Amino acid sequence: MATVCAVVVSGGSGSRFGNPGGKQLVSVAGRPLMTWSIMAFDRSVLVGHIVVVCPAERRDEMRRLAIDPFEFATPITFADAGETRQDSTRAGVAAVPEGFEYVAIHDGARPLITTEVIDRAICALEDDRSLDGVVCGQPAIDTLKIVDGSRIAETPPRSLYWAAQTPQVFGVDAVRRAHEAALAEGFVGTDDSSLVERVGGAVRCVESPRDNLKVTVPEDLRPVTAILLGRMSDAERAQDTGVLRSRG
Image (tube, rainbow, N blue to C red; front, side, top):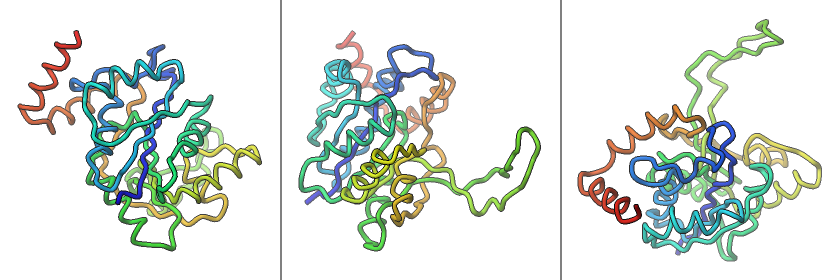
C-alpha cells in the first residue's frame, strides 16, 4: 500500500517569470508546466495521493487545463496557497489525508523530475528509520565565496556544499511539527528541510540529476523544453498535439 502523499506547490505569482498569471500553466513541450511534475508522481507506485497547492481563485482553471485532460490515476486534491512558499507548503502538508506516513514536497516549476528519482528519494527515507527526511540535490561544482560587501572574506571547501532541489521527502509528523514551530516562532526558512533541521531533525542529501531544473525566468524554458522533447516518443508528441488541437 502506498505510504507517500505528494505535495506539488504551484502557488507562485510569477513575478520573476514576468507573467501576471504565473508560470504554472505555460505550455512546455505540449503540456502545462505543472502537469509534468504531477505526471512523474502519478507514475510512482509509492505515491498514493497528490495534493496540488495553488491560489484558491485559480483552482478550477488549473484543474481544467493541467489535470483533467491527462487522466491521472492517482487521486488529486487541492490546498489553497498562502502569501509565501512556506505558507503554501504548510497548507499542503496540512492537507495530506490520514494514513500517509511520508510526504514528498515538490516545486510545480521543476518539470524535469522523473519517477525514478522520486522513488529513489522515498526509498532512501523508508530504508533508514534514523532519518526524518531526505533532500534531492547536487554536490556543488562551482567554487563558492563568502563575500562581505564585494570583498571576498573566505573561500570555503566546496566539498561541504550541496545545491538543494526538490522533491524533499519527510515523515509527515516530523515536517508538520517543524512547520508549527516555525509559525509559532516567526521563523522563515529557505526550504522545508531548513525547518526540519532547525528543530533537530536528521535530514540526508540524495543525489539527483543536474537537469532537475527549476523554471524561474522565461529563458529557463528553452533548455527545459529541449530536454522534455528529447525524452518523449514520437507517439507521445503526436498525442500531445492532438490534445492541444482539441482544446484549441
